[in-house]
Image (cartoon, rainbow, N blue to C red; front, side, top):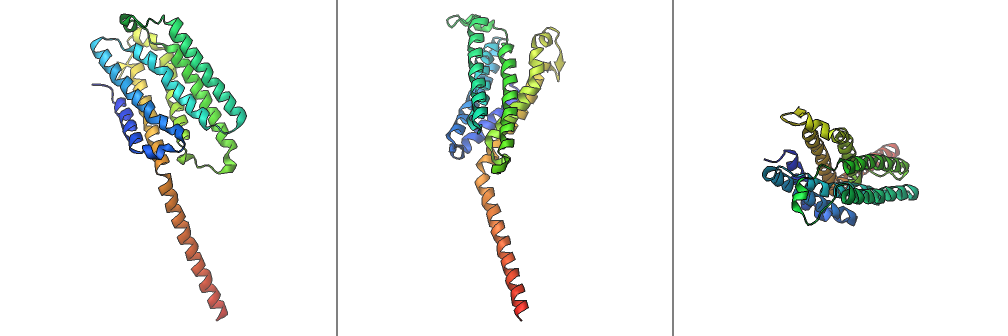
Length: 253
């Protein structure tokens, strides 16, 4: 059976579809269900090819540029300050160019030879480079949020904040194990009866997609929560007004 982390990915997809109407503002968030659908398909295909062909790395070599490109794109779109936005856009373009060049030339891509896919080694260079860029861009985004404190943006209602946070934790947790991927496999270093690389990746995936689930929920329900707060403030204001009126009447008497 596929890893338990895949259930979190499926749950995130289902919740994003359930709240899809709430993801229409801004339109950029509509890419989230698409990204999660691609993620689930990639995981299921990875499970299938791993089970029947004992080789599924080529799937993740296709998927990783989409994964990191998504996080870099979402952060870029939500950065407010002009100079920081230019930097984040430049980082996105650099990653896409690097991933394309690394995929096409370093791996020796052969579109017409399926067997060559099965012999692919895990493309850790794209993963490591993408992880470093997501970490850096997430920190850049946090700096942008600090500069926006005066605008009183609520972080818990900001879906991009949750996306950046999930990406930051995932990449920070996975980058070391990915760097040591070949060493872990060749020396059969295990954790919970699976390769340490796989075990860490699953744990980080749970954190990532658990964060996305929370972010989607917080974003989708922010209007309802804000309405409750407004009603509470109105009730408190009405109560204060009554107390002031009673105090005024008592003085006049």
